[in-house]
Length: 384
Image 1: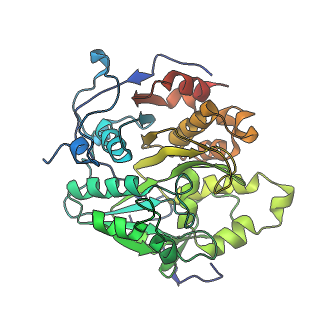
Image 2: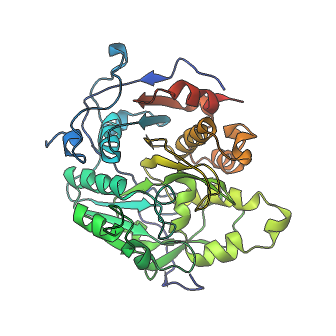
């Protein structure tokens, strides 16, 4: 998990169609989640539902017994599977979704796990990852035997990450994200003044210079991606792919991605770059907070919000974001998303082209629990 490095420190430079593959599954597999940092850039216990914010009953309407999978491990889960769960509480949905992914059997005792939430600024969900979702993931990782769980982020623009995490966003404004994270058993690591390394993925053809990523990625065993479900005024949508922009140094963000005058003549360039930068990050699991969804005006207020009440999980960022787009199309969203099929979105198509994940809708399998509208979501996903 090591990648070549040229050290840099601090904040330099400033801040469709339903198919037979759709299944409703219910399983009693163990709970847990995590994600693995790859090298593309060079380098028992109590029932989780009983432990999740007082939720004592499994969500959903049951399942066809023929569809119940045999017990297995996380490695047995297909790469293109996307799990959608609706439960009594966000924490219960996270726990159940993790169970449907066969738990975090890949975490070895003592390993370091890093969580990357979406913390755009001191604003509540759906524009940031919810406190309840992040806290439950921390608890799941610790229950699986992680030696250390780290929550790492570099917030947007000139904002200081510490200030954002200290803002009272949790529990109706009574506690900060930092308090919740630390109480759940994680270490908060703001990346503003951490060392950064230069990496140059071969497929990042729109980057003329190396991409600056935090050196902490070389220090952890697993990475988990915890995005929010929302629209974006530049990227069109921001979900699991775009969430990793928070692991790119401001010099790269502002000078190479946003600040290049070529963007005026090639408006698709930034969208392609959001996909290409993902060659630096290879999470094994992505857990998307879709309890609320920003359907217009993202990535921050003002705009419309839908109470989608679901958590979406997948090993595959392309599959997950495609399903996220299908959810937005189902509930109603912006013209830029509704006017073209999911797989024609530039950011997603570029991610497919450079090999970030699955190659198209035929490689995506939906598993839903408590999601009555799953057939409609799948129809949007498979429209061509």
